[in-house]
Image (tube, rainbow, N blue to C red; front, top):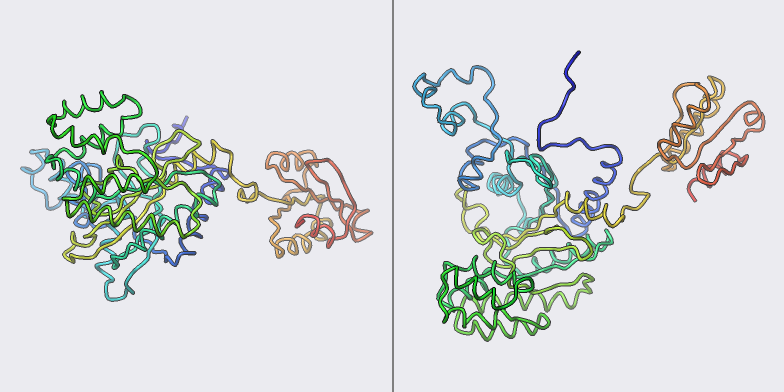
Length: 454
């Protein structure tokens, strides 16, 4: 007996129902990106390894899926090299290409290669799969989709405002209540400068983030364990105990950072973004959150993160401002800001809250029963007319027992079934059955189409 086939660990098959839901997510995000003037690009699944290696750190390099060269890939490798069994060295000799690890590095490569063709600022979005040779576990896959949007070639903070509006628009369309959290890398740098602990900013933000769970005394104890002095911890107290609305928090942090030029710049940028957002009729909650410290080695300005309010789940969108996207490819100084929607987590949120519109599932609306050649010939023009009017329509391909055809309709949850036998054909009509109520009516083809569309 042949072995049962399988798929690689960390990958997934998606059923028609799951794909309908995923496409609803992707199409919604795609429509909103386009609404704000972003243009779609795609990059190859494979990039040259020289493009990918060294861009994600040592750990990232290990997680790259590498593609063996075609042909005799061992031709130029010596026996001595093989005997050393150095996996990274051998991979470099055997492989010239790899699967993309994210969408950011390919985007940077794209901008450098096509710089002369691009109108700056360049507003791009990209919805494609990425691959990581990570250890698969719940919620972590080796193949998954990213939904990125970036604006490059502009330092204007209006770009940050617009990206937050995009986040708000997407989740409003989904019907998901979210909290859009915002911080600024410059504020975090200013805090570290002010208390004289520039190397401890990650420890500080991690500890502050636990305030609600463990209380102020335990937070201070943890900071002490992380190597902060009592004087430094004392200076942090107004920050740790930050409360009130966004304006109150900004006023407090502005006072604390008054002697830090970079910190004051971060406060100024954050205040501008929040003040402009007040004029945009944004529907989502927006919170200035000092504990937000994502991508400290990458982001240089505003940082965003989005949490769902009605579901316990991690961040479902994130992003921020960076100053040197293309520097890794020898074209320094190109600033940008971007966001990425977590499609898999959004899928889980919409499932838990049961927020998928029925019409988004793209299921068949109308099935014509097949009674034989004459009946099929009578029905086919009506089938074509239904499809021309946008009604998702099938005709059962085989003239089998009606019970089997009706079972097919039930299994696919098709709401309407059309039947045309000798009686209907003689009158130029069709019997239309509502599969939900069980009601049947004899109608003309035009009446049938109007009924389905209504």
